[in-house]
Image 1 (cartoon, rainbow, N blue to C red):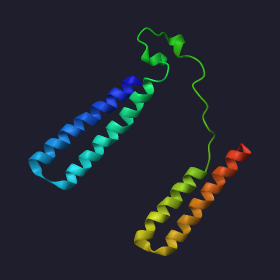
Image 2 (cartoon, rainbow, N blue to C red):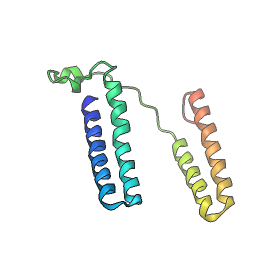
Image 3 (cartoon, rainbow, N blue to C red):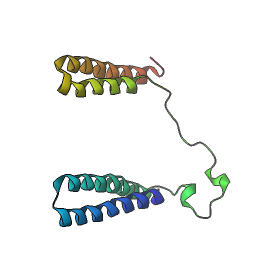
Image 4 (cartoon, helix red, strand yellow):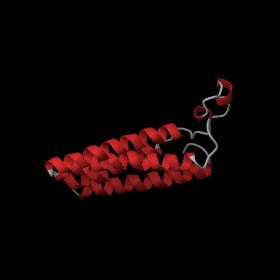
Length: 130
């Protein structure tokens, strides 16, 4: 994870320098705010990955002397497919649309979001698709 953290920290540093230069030369707030956001999008996960990479055992991809056999084995457990993330995204879309189209989309969106929350909880307790 060290390589990933270094790449993200480089991206964050680059956009931090560009944002500072942009602000000093233009005094424009909108572009500076976007560049600060880009700086944070690189620095925050990069710092988190660097923090975790120092506390965990190195992966085979982090070891320069590793062989192909060192990376073999179980990668991890992945959850099965589920409809509830799609339902939650649809509910969030309706909630955001309430700013434009009115309160009726807020009601639909909240209903879908609550249904997705209940569905995820029920599915995780039951151990399968609902």
